[in-house]
Image (cartoon, rainbow, N blue to C red; front, top):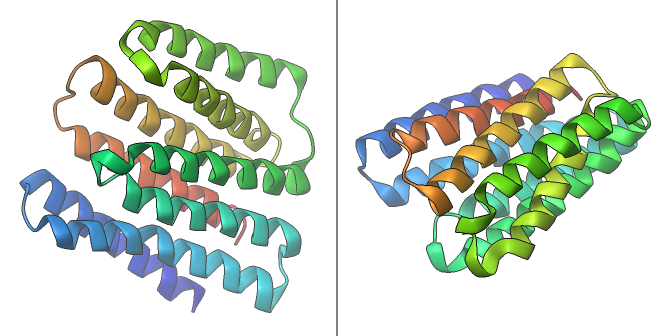
Length: 203
């Protein structure tokens, strides 16, 4: 059953990216986008609840994925963009707690390096943010904290977190600075790959 959820998620991600790149069937692309992360949630949650392989950590990470499902939907609508940010911020907090259960606290050097990277990126785009400066700053702190904590788990988790960060960095640059060619391909491929690796790291 877990393999089924993962395979369906990968298939949905490929369909989503294809539809987005072609610019067709927008409603269908939203459905497949949501299904991609939803399948990963079902895989991790069912594994944590029924097989007890990761217990508390699995449940926390699954809630992070569930928050991502909401974020995936909200970000498809410009007027709901802030709600999407809030959903993903909440998801990052669940990830932080889940990663803490699995790997404990990150090293001080990892925490400083990741936070410094996030702050540098924030300062780079700050002048373009307008009224969203505070919200984006909070989000950057949240995702950087998530990446730092992922470094204490394993390579798979850390790789997924870094891809997630990269996806959000590209999305923010496209939204606030200037349009990125093939944005959907870059943002969605890194995002889906990141979520997949995070999910696989607890399965």
